[in-house]
Amino acid sequence: MPKITPNLWFDTEAEEAAEFYTSIFENSRIVSKSHYGEAGPRDAGTVMTVEWEIDGQRFVGINGGSQFKFDEAVSFAINCADRDEVDYFWEKLSDGGREGQCGWLSDRFGLSWQVVPEGMGSVLGDPDPERSRRAMEAMLKMSKLDIDALRRAADGAPVA
Image 1: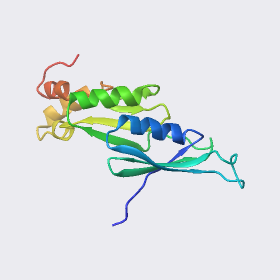
Image 2: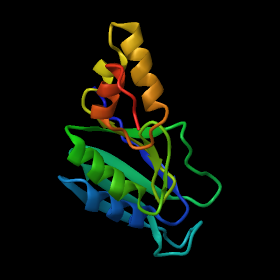
Image 3: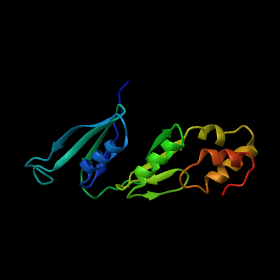
């Protein structure tokens, strides 16, 4: 089975982004960098690509220019084991970025992330349609997700 490597287009920030992401995630490292040569299209010696790895998943950042921007059509989901992990990734990735709705945020480079607490699938997919509806309504009012509050909402308790 072939491995899929996400390739992320940056203007000039690929190296900075790789350093940012590898500083946040455990078991991560910068693997390699390549530089533009005399043929361009950027100044010779500037970083062209950076390859990094997060827990065995490779990524490539390309300094290709300003013509393409990230948007929410593509995001990376982080499945978090507990509230501490949700808080950690939310704080680190939203620093310099912007918080969205329903557990989504954009980091300082404009890349979208979903910070997802364990148990989301079961609370939103509850076989009782009323429990599921109440949880969904509560989630739609949240920025950073709180699985305990979603469970309380599913039970019929008001969410602050």
